[in-house]
Image 1 (cartoon, one colour):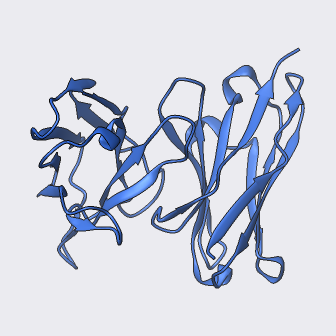
Image 2 (tube, rainbow over the protein chains, first blue to last red; image 1 turned 60 degrees about the vertical axis):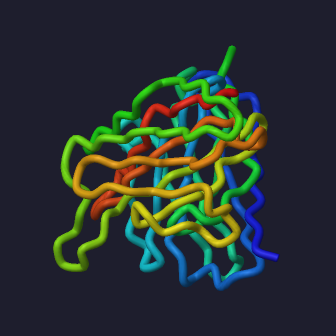
Length: 113
Length: 113
């Protein structure tokens, strides 16, 4: 079964750091671009970051310089290192395959003192 | 960045009637070299991740009922549900994935009975 499972979401203080992980299974992970999409409570979807199957990385402007996306194909895993977190980063973070055909259930990041 | 604007923000349609949601991009998402529109539609029900309905503006994802259809080209796109069913109550999003990220989403359209 094709599956994405996120982990690592937590309550963190403003200015803190967090690392999200996404474990992929059921498909050849290295063949696909991967993305992180986030959704603040009661709001719409925001594409946050993506990494190509060749390793090229991209970010939305609001997270550039603070977030780092990476992948470890040998472990079928996607990561998002988030630094200098603020209240605006509070959201559910979804791991998404390629053209959006597979989504994880999401992991919740809460930034609050 | 490409801005995606959906209309209306919310919509109430009777069971069995047609529902139409519009999406407009701030620049064309039609790639001339392959004549494909880099536009997708998603459905999100409460407490669930989004589900891909349509990609390339008009190609239905496997398993999606044929009452869902996508149309349009360039900057103007439409998602049509031909005969609304109770299970179609959801928020619908368009997303562009044209060339370089960020792959922006529309603000969402809430569909009710």
